[in-house]
Length: 163
Image (tube, rainbow, N blue to C red; front, side, top):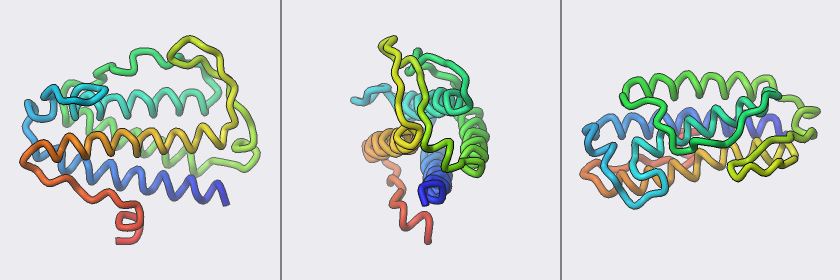
């Protein structure tokens, strides 16, 4: 059941990202990049951070080592390029969850966190964190969108999964 649950979260993740990017595309580049009271400083910075986090975790899930550095990196200055990269990453996530096995989820992963500490955690917890991380930061973006003239989208899981 856990495999199916993560597959549902990947589907939701993709739908929520699409909906959020659609709304953000209505904002000017200046509005997306405007400094706001948020950890990653702007809508654009937070969208980039989500992509950074996804790439870090997918690398770790693949068995490769990558540190959690440069969490505030701006991978794409151009919004359209960022949106294209987001769609590619969502396809990678879909491929990852389609190949999930119970055995993999019952394993552990050793990695180096942002503070340089070596951690060893259960895969099922890390995959749950992977999806929760995006949801958390999408919520921050949702709040920042409310600070503009654009209405934020509804990102309720049950409304996106079963419209």
